[in-house]
Image 1 (cartoon, one colour):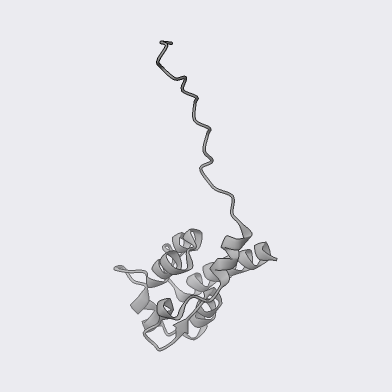
Image 2 (cartoon, one colour):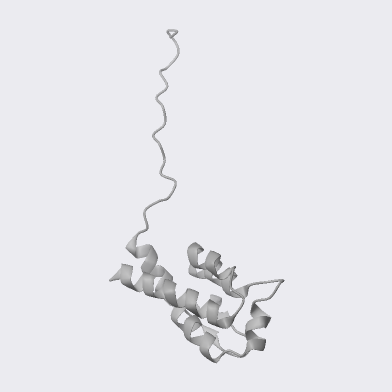
Length: 117
């Protein structure tokens, strides 16, 4: 090594997946601010995952297909952009029916509530 060169230390390895914090999970269960609620085209308003999960029960097929079709998936986008749950948003990309969507949301809701408490 030359006199004027500084020794370069190798960088510490960076974990690819940061540990999930309970606070992050709790945030995913909270009601969202009024400005970013999910306005369903049948008049329902979803403020959190629980609202969405229960909303699938009374939502018509036409309403479901309005929000999830070959051109868009409003549920997945809202979960990703507003709730901040990448795992659930990704899972919702593969659903085709209200029943499948409800099961995915319900499963995730249970996971999050169990991790929280």
